[in-house]
Image 1 (cartoon, rainbow, N blue to C red):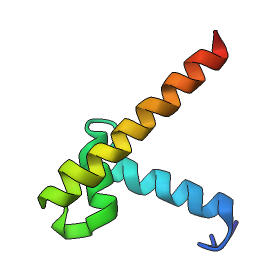
Image 2 (image 1 turned 90 degrees about the vertical axis):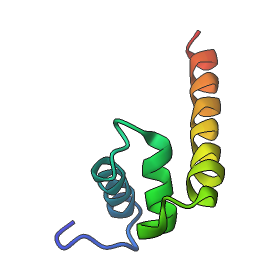
Image 3 (image 1 turned 180 degrees about the horizontal axis):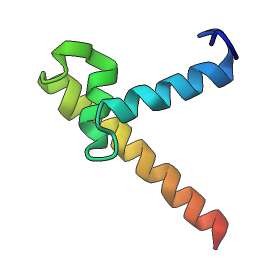
Image 4 (image 1 turned 180 degrees about the vertical axis):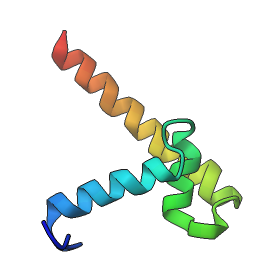
Length: 71
């Protein structure tokens, strides 16, 4: 959409993906999730080691489910 709208699901989904890519998700998903959740304070324990870790674990669970469905 031009201009993109944060209230449009497609626009918001793409914007989130681009933000996480810019935050370094291709190198470290846990840190990218912490940056998404906490902004500039992402280095705090609760951001990296609680929230970030939970996001990575949930992603792994999703991937396991996808692998099961594909087999």
